Amino acid sequence: MMRLGAGFIVAGAALNAFAQQTTQVQMYGLVGAYVAKSERSGGPAAVTQLGHGGLTTSYWGVRGSEDMGSGYKAIFALESFFQTDTGGLGRNAVDGLFARNAFVGVDSRFGRLTFGRQTNPTYINMGTLSPFGVSVVFSPLVLQSFVGTYNGALIGDTVWNNTIQYATPRVGGLAGNIIYGLGEVPGSSGRANLGLHANYVNGNFSAAFSAQRFRVPVTAPLAQQNAYLLGATYDFKAVKVYGSLAKTDSSGVSSNTRTHDVGVRVPITQSGALLAEWAHTKRERAGLPDNKRNTASIGYDHFLSKRTDVYAVYSRDKQTGFESADTIGFGVRHTF
Image (tube, rainbow, N blue to C red; front, side):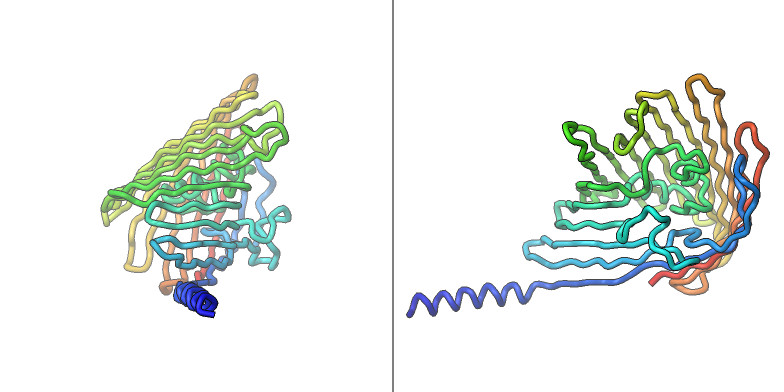
């Protein structure tokens, strides 16, 4: 009886210890929409549309953490894209429910380890190097890197499947991460995607570096693509300047690209800023003439409140062998 009672006391103490651990769950997201008359060089005739996203792709998510003691936390995030104009799920018909992020992991003072579908850190770093952020509609750097209709230089999505990611804590302004995407190809355990990334912040200066190897999914004769990104920003207060270089090299088929990008953000009022950016990409392909593309955007972004802003953007696009094309758009976004 004494042993049984002691067991109950020990079990009760354990349950009480678990009960004291803190669990937090949060819902959040961003709703954006824009109206634009859009046309790209070498593309179809201009179209006037109400689009979803704009400066940021619309999404909602749920994230949570549980304090496990000794500085460790269990974490998770489930994030879904959606289309403001139609109410549709995802960015397109291919996206699943949680296409933006779906991961679980552990966070501690030694760093963070996560497993699942996760945003490509190259895309995150790129957003810090463009005054238009991660916009797949208005950022020249992102358009020429990730958007297929703009001859996107990088193969693969802005989100990777089947990944394991380790992110270091920030030390002396420097943080980094490594991401490994299992290819899940039978008989080819090494057929996987790999990324090495770093970013540095010190006062008004910041810099970012990404190197990635993309193998899955690619279509023969392409075997893999290696891509590199290096850039920096400096905030002079009167103007913030951006600059970056990117390159890709392919195996199995010769198709290499080089990208140069510069931009500025100029505060006009306490709530608004002028944004301007230009990107140039040269594509070299075996047996074909080189293709050069220049895309420039200029816009104004004004915050009506802490969570809501409105903006206007004008873009001009020109590629080899085609006339230049113009896009003008107006949008609004709200975070929650």
